[in-house]
Each structure stands twice: as C-alpha cells, then as structure tokens.
Amino acid sequence: MAKDWVVRKRRPVRRKQIAPLLAVLEESLGVDLNLDGAFLEIAEYGPWRLMIVDKEPHTVEIENQDGEIVAALTLRGLLANNATRGWLEVDRGATPFLMNGADCMAAGIHAAHDEIVEGDLVWIRDQEHKRPLALGWACSSAEEMIEATSGKAVKTLHWIGDELWNMEF
Image (cartoon, rainbow, N blue to C red; front, side):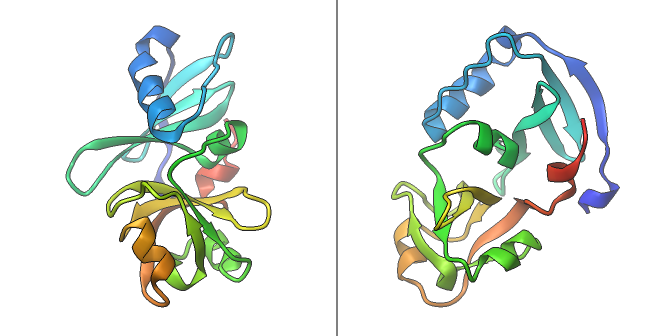
C-alpha cells in the first residue's frame, strides 16, 4: 500500500491559498496553527494530499467512507501542535501493536475525547507520555470504546512506523 506511494506534484503555496484548510483544522482539533514565516508546500502522496511545513508533512487530507474530504494533522503535525480534540488514549500494552500498524482494539483504550463519534478521523496517543502513535477511523463513539472490552475500536490509517513518518522531505 503506502510502500508504493511517492510524493508527487510538490509545489510551494501561499498561506491565503490554504487558509480554509487551516481554519477547519484549528476548529476541529482545538489548535492554533501559527505558520507565520514558514515555508509551505502542497504535495500528493498516493491518494492523500499533504501540506508540508518547513520540509515536514504537517497536515493530510483524506477521503472518508462517505467520499468527503477530511483534514487532519499528521503525527509530526500533532507533535508540533498541542491538539486538544479527537484523541484516544491507550495503555502501554497496545503501543507495540500500534507501532507496527495494527488496528486499535477497544480493550487497550482507557480514555477518549468525549466528542468522538463513529466514522471520525481520530488520533491515538499513549497514556503515559500523551504522544501521538497513530491516526485512524473510529469504529464507534468514545463512550462505547471506553466501555467495550473486546473488538476493534479504530481502523488504523497512519502510524509511527509508517513510511510517511520516516520520509525525508
């Protein structure tokens, strides 16, 4: 899958060209994306559209199950900005599986942002350090994920071990 993808059509953009994308991200994740003076680029990576900030991929636009385009911060973007919404927290036991690209199972989830509903693009963080581990599609609401003891909670889309994370731009 991602191993066959390459970064294509990489081009510089002005802030005003991506202002709508930034406004959606700031509202949905509760972050302040201060990109003053940053070198901004847009590129395609497989079916995704990336926004590259100072040679690091910070945002990604992905098509959801309904065919709508959804914007999210990449793992590097989450590290650079303190997102306060759309997160799930997993215990130490789930971390090795997530770092290898596995889907997130409900048994490992201990906390979640209360506004998450089924089909949302969410980010998964570790319980101890609060650092992002993966992005994925929520398979149920936050309340159902926390209460569940078995089953898949998140279909993983992008994780720390992923090629995009390690790619040099």
